[in-house]
Length: 295
Ligand code: MEV
Image (cartoon, protein in one colour):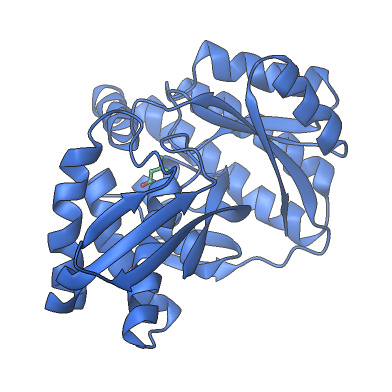
């Protein structure tokens, strides 16, 4: 059995696609994959919404040949049983966690040791099926299982002397990471100066957030999250629902809140000292809420 945790991006999504840094952390919710030799090879999903947008079959068709090219013919005799606590398509790394857990479970079955970098490289090949040409942050933070600074395909662990509580509120599946990334690209091409300015402002926030995390200045981490959210709005990837969920969080004691991941739907994260209370507020408003600790 192999397990891989989901992720949240604390700062820098979208900007990271253009070579700027981003900060991401794993969350407590995971995907589990059990690989076994069988006469009925393939994928069995217990409750994993591989792709809540309806192209799951198409993706699955590409998955087996990709796994075979990475791990060899022996994959054709393996069945993968997949269970997930991570809602699919909601910006929480469900596909990246699936990619990492699939690789780990197969290696485990074959009794093969690979280091984190090798697992990360293999998971990227799978992640490309789901997201085209991702920056690599999702499957990297998931394979690293920590809080990371990520830039141009390199990850560095960030020391966090004061761990903090995050509550995640989920609006439902977003329109797709690829679509959101393409929309930002179109904006960049139509209006390069303003878009570059926004991406640079996001990069400043990301630098300041790293400093705040390392010095245990949780209030500043939260304020920077809220600022990052506004800039993601300027990039066109927020929605009225995500904006109003961030407002709901702040009206209910959160120190800061932002959308996380590709946007256009999906999830927000809120930093709070009262996670139970805030999770109850989100649930009361009709949203699924998850709690996690960063650091
Ligand atoms: C998705 O979790 C993060 C994005 O920056 C896309 C990527 O980095 O590949 C929106």
